[in-house]
Image (cartoon, rainbow, N blue to C red; front, side):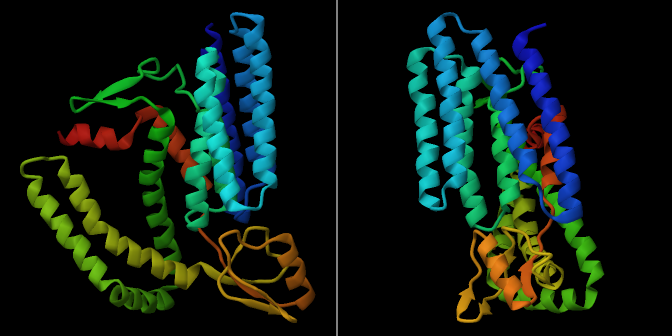
Length: 348
């Protein structure tokens, strides 16, 4: 059996197992233990390094594979220890630079691709994290998946093609890209279903907040709905525009709906015993002369200790468990590929 084929199968199975365990803990505790994501990341790195060594054509490539492994581990160490956001971007650029210059050494792409995937994901997930679109656990899971699927699994259709045809155009054949696109679709569906469930649990408060947000976003809603209607009219000439037209019309209603659910059902008071590192504060907390302010980084261990001393309950944002979205998206990507491309093919 082909070594890379076997390696890709093992990596995919490991990713699925870790996501199942992480999804369970995310649902039950709204947190994912670091050992789950880091175990997956290190296992993937070790497997890719071993494959690169076995496939090396000379002793120099074996040595370079070991050096790359050590560089990656050091990069992860500095990334985790770093507390300055802009330095994370520097680490990402260094990783991408290592990938670029390794091409001159003719190294096996199976290992080198980890640097590119990890570097790009560090940049993307930083925007997601500091924009409060995802929590720290979600980011760590995504970084682990970036290493696992830094190359397209060879057991998939078109795995050996650099490009695949879509509507007469050639688009890059990148499995991680398909996964992220599918995560948007799955995340949207999962988010709506989860929000509907939460809205029914707090109907009175939800209805009040829905009216408030409808007025607040009225201008934005009208603009997007008008643009959506224009695209639906233009879809007479280009059928694929119907997707974007419907999407623009739905978005303002989803924004109001999800914002209302967040205000009505996803904010709760917690004692220090219930708090975990990374929880997002909703409002300032005064402890003696010190004020703990809401931040994109969430609560630190020091903050929780201060809250413990005060004995106060604090208001935090208890978000939607998002790791199950990654699990479902991965399964969808492995079976169906890119859902956006699939929908566009159906419509055209």
